[in-house]
Image (cartoon, rainbow, N blue to C red; front, side, top):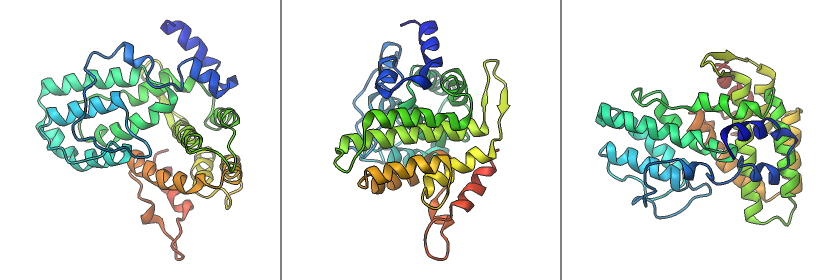
Length: 295
């Protein structure tokens, strides 16, 4: 499939099932990336055990190159996505100081290749790794916003249109109280991917001319934050979808929230422990107010 054909298929994605999304390369495992990257898929020596969301070979190769070029010690013994993200956030000033201009240029190219040929399901994981570096390591140019515009904003017209992808994907997975751990993993992966896309589309995006296009959809943003945070307390369209998932598959809830809190920290640097109320539960209205600063 050439680039023009792929872009045309992407435009039709909201009417497709998860199976059809997979067939067109939107939810597979780096099918297109494998044909284009020019850096080696190396065994990452600090990886010994997998977490709920392992970072995968291509992303691990990028992280390994980043660590090696920064002369960092291997400070993690896991390939868990959020553990690696945390490690990079803690080491970001060391990385920035250690990189030469030549190595920064190489990593810029590697970052571009990593995000150019990628699917929606993998994109949020890549962002979790790159985000801790974006603001601090200025000499590496990351292509996160540009690639949201060129690929995933074609999937939906508005932030809440992302729910159409969620619903079709969940209909394909068919969660129940007898769902396997694999299906639970797939469902959470899909929900997180669409959460990220929905939140970003409510804030704004970069158009094809490289210009920032603010959206500022405060209502949609609130629905994503509160609907994921506490779907039973907040009556909105996002919460309706998430609560239905919990009702159909009660076993999903613990894994969902354990990893959702980590997603908020890795991508948006929000620690839910900072937003606890008097009964030690998360005040999602306060979390939403923090997100409002991004509008």
